[in-house]
Length: 328
Ligand code: ASP
Image (cartoon, rainbow, N blue to C red; front, side):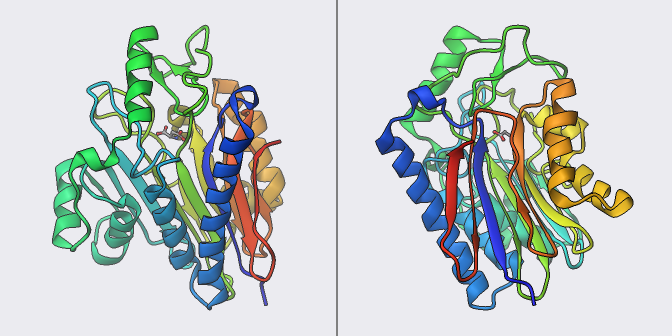
């Protein structure tokens, strides 16, 4: 029997070590610990991997420290556009939504799409209508706004108006190609946070993954990153692994990053950690991709690679204390 395990991330890049105070670090680590413990409790009670990742991502969305749900970044028009996805490794069923600004917990909407729709992916007004019809919590868009995020937007617009900036490490993105010639320094040393995600394997050996984000600060209205794209920002199959990514979404889309890990395992028999390392360290950097991912396989192996200074991350095996970290 497999020892169930959950892993979570709160964004790659994290704030630079120089800007991190011991109090802030503690705040992040306890938020990660608490959320890991909640996901672990679901698994310990015999809950499914799907329920564990849903609960962990819901809590990450509600936590203002992370860029998803409450505390999401702003678009260039000072609005919010939230994206989320979920996938069940046992059946390959999946659900996703993008570009919503009134669904309190985007991951719950993604799960509803997976379970109660014949479709996989809803965007904008249609996604919001679907969420309303299915009784999800609807909030005013201002619910997602925090002062820290508004200041972050104003600062990007003042300093690098043409760049959309990756939330956590200030990486400037220009068009759909390489990062800007001179990538911006961390945009806001105090408030660079990230996308969130969770992956898990339960006692039955079922895998699941979920990802949720506000995207990147100052993104153009209508821009969608990798987070809600099955195969790019989220993937799960009991045959291989469950993966959730964070980073420069454009590059993760072009590399089909999450599925690449599973494909290496399935076609070449590559072990989980090596498959994930190749995507993060060898492949993404060739097109300027920055970020990381979390992954578990059907045997309960866990890997959390990233190519940035840090990544808010952790894992918790049932029966063992959660392990959370930020830097290398
Ligand atoms: N991958 C996310 C996106 O491109 C951003 C992030 O992970 O910070 O929307």
